[in-house]
Amino acid sequence: MARARTVFVCQQCGAQFAKWLGRCQECGAWETVVEESVAPRPATGGGGGFGGARTSVAIAAQRAAKPRALSAVTSESHARIRTGLEELDRVLGGGIVPGSVTLLGGDPGIGKSTIGLQVLAELAKGGLTALYVSGEESPEQVKLRADRLSCNESVLILPETCVEEIIGHVAATDPGIVLIDSIQTMHSRELTSAAGSVGQVRECAAALVAQAKSTGKPMLLIGHVTKEGTIAGPRVLEHVVDTVLHFEGDQGGGLRLLRAVKNRFGPTNEVGVFEMGERGLEDVANPSAVLLAERPKGASGSAVLPTIEGTRPLLVEVQALCTRSALAMPRRTTLGLDANRVAVLTAIVDKRAGLKLFEHDLFVSVAGGIRVQEPAADLAIIAAIGSSASDTPLPEGLTLFGEVGLAGEVRAVRHAETRLREAHKLGFTRAVVPAATARQVRAPDGLDVQGVATVLELWTALFGGRRRAAAAASRQHDDAGDAF
Image 1 (cartoon, one colour):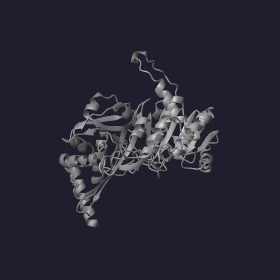
Image 2 (cartoon, rainbow, N blue to C red):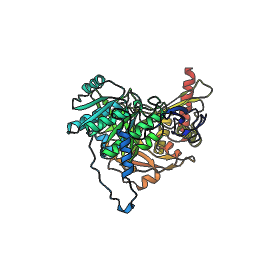
Image 3 (cartoon, rainbow, N blue to C red):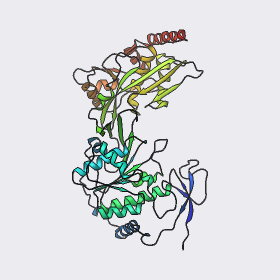
Image 4 (cartoon, one colour):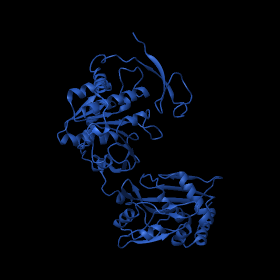
């Protein structure tokens, strides 16, 4: 009888080694190689229950595959399955593709199980048999969530963690869609390691993907995330699935963002916006209005940025707070923005506009829990910093966007007309944009577009020039010193 063998697997990339290493030779990560015990694979079938389903399916698929000319392959158009959630369909590219496997990740409590149950309930309304495989919660707990979401449809519930048993039940019930909650709780009889280990996650995901491809039944996999916000388990987990979705947002707030990190059947630059309510996640048709609903009027340090998420424009509020520091090294804190980018912009306004912030703490954030990574936010960040430092509110109805270079030049960005149309739709009357964009863009009627070529021109347009802005910041510095 064959004995189990011991291998050492990297938890980051899934690479296997014959001995333990402090640093993975494949991905270079430290302290990620762990020991696993792997049982020998049976020649045919599995042991007991539905255990032989996965192996027989894989062997049949291998024997049926034969090489053929690429020109002889016909492209098939799959009819997508609409989920009933417009924002989710937008991110997926129009709906769920039959036979596809979608991995949904996000922080604990962000709403992964909620949206999964909502999708199954919506599809059950259309007559599709839906199977909910729960590896973390009991059927009674799932029922409580279903009652809260008013999901009283005929969704099948299966409390099971063995992947061989799950595949057997899927073959017996023949559901139209399967939800696995979660992939980290699944285990295979062929491995002796604990559920959630690198080998178990990799093996279970591969078995479920093979089942989905062979039967044409779509599967939704819910995955845990690490402290860094990435999908827990080896990177191969993201490679074997067709679509990887990430939930983002502040659990204390109402808005949730759903991004497509990988999508073999649609775009990867789309984003869906949901709002968490008493009855689950609801589509947000106009997220810009929601994000700006509580924006303070007449407050300094606030600027509105029309950013692009995928193909849709979003108006977000960039806030900055500049205060006198009591520390030897002032703090630089950012939320929702790249900290290195904010540090570079702070140095640019110091050099090009004369704004001295070396004795001030600086806090910059994007309201609403939104993350903005595009360089088009540079002008709005600089305007918010200058507004807070000089304690001068920006004019009402003003929006800004543009990229700033190290020499202080303002560069054009893409989708300028889309940004301006969104700003005009929400009642904004003035926009400060790069000079090249102002010469080429067709602005909507009623929206005054002003182009700036340098940071100094921006300073002149908003705060009256270098000396005036520097003097205002100096007065605020003196006032703060008197308070101490």
